[in-house]
Length: 294
Image 1 (cartoon, rainbow, N blue to C red):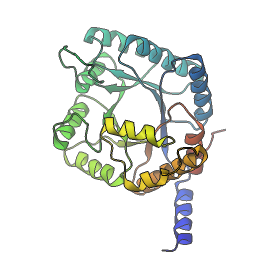
Image 2 (tube, rainbow, N blue to C red):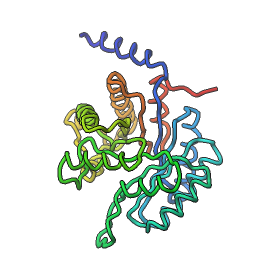
Image 3 (cartoon, rainbow, N blue to C red):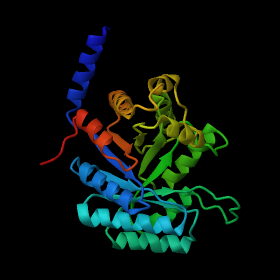
Image 4 (tube, helix red, strand yellow):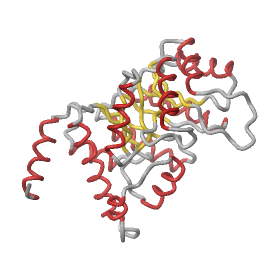
């Protein structure tokens, strides 16, 4: 197929989507006034795209935990968007988690992203896994619960099969949805989705999409999260360390291509890791036919 024909096919497919994709966005709590301004500018910019929900990450310390609570409640109150806090079981007692969950429910929060959290050095408490947190939340109220999955295997998992079984336990405990770690090898996602189906996981496996504006930062994140960086992606960013404009164009192109291919495979829900910046995510969604609702 000629290049012109490929572009024509891509354009036609994007036109066929006609905005029928469901999107959600992830933010993180700001640490200073400047970052808070950036966050709220991004939320205001992206809310017009009518995301299914927006999530706010959660740090394993009381200061960041409180910021997450505050941001989530403010999003809900000020924008009307469905706001979903990340909640980890690693740094609070079950009794404290019950109180946090009740407070969220009483504040109108109905969706939660339930995670184990990263164990700090010297952690000596009894293990409290994501499946335990899901069960605890389910016992408190009828939350809509999302959990994490790792198409390329969790870095601490003993094996891919053990990782898959752990995900099944989270679903069996009452989780409704699955959001993946970011990835770039689409085949790894599709194989993972098939393996989930093969053991009876019927929840939708929502792909996490990360538009990459800083390749060096990506390399650090990928090393920690066990995400494979394809050679083709590394070549795309080669020589662009001092060229943010071209990096943004590359980031948007890669993300749109991923959504295009995955949508052809039947995926309709996508979760965007925004890093609290709206411009790139907005441009990607706009090009995919997701427009502001009047």
